[in-house]
Amino acid sequence: LENNGIKTHYRGLGEGDEPVRVDDLASPTDTMSISLAYKPEVRHRKGSYHYEDLAGRKNFLIPLEIVFRNYVPGGSSLRERCLPEEVGIDGREWPEGEVELESPVVEFSTKLERQDRYLDEERAFEISGLNREEFGELKRIAAEVNRLLTERAKERGFKHLDGKIECIYDSGEILVADVAGTFDENRFSYAGRSVSKEVLRSWYKNEDREWYEELVDAKEKARGGQVEEWRDLVDSEPRQLPEELLRLVSNLYRAGANQWLKCKVFAAPEIPQIMEGLEQWKKKNNS
Image (tube, rainbow, N blue to C red; front, side, top):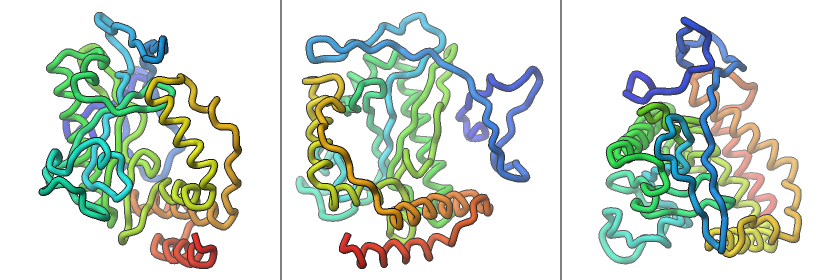
């Protein structure tokens, strides 16, 4: 990312050490250099969250998740928050199925609350700890990360639907933190089929409906500020995922990593074979 104007944090490196790009490694590594950032305080009082004033701090985690969207699937929450014409789609009714956006949409959600909730841009700016110019840079970085991931995905045979990043502020610079472009933080598809944790989420939606609806209801109450900890409202336990589904999804992640890196890091079948296995499993189990 550095060569595209996005800096990463390498303070864990020793004196005089140079960061190594993943693409330059001769073989996979299990070593990662890290550095720490201050985590702002967020307090929940009288049904709302109150954020620490970060003015004057030189190093902190920006208390936002920056979300970027290239496509809008049928079940996307974006459909509930805005009209299609607000994101460049003709008409006041959302089309059925997946919709490609003419231009990517950048949104903001909370990062440090018990349940993430989407914010309008002005509220996101207010709690970010940044000035106007820095907040604009935050949006630019998110758009650039999205562009890079979308291009890499296309090169590797994937489609990049949406994703998010988290960032830190460090002495006047905004740095990408945590991860970018994983199958958990981002939604990818391959040959029209999902390569993400959405596969497991869909199983719970369809096969463990009672627990899933209880979970959604609890999170909605937390999102509205009625409670701070949504887990306290969930009484039931989720069902155990089927062993065969776990094996298939585990291999999907392994094969996806191999495909993304163009390197046989994991022993796993090729993605098309796993996709076929998932389809056969769904038919057999009516899932």
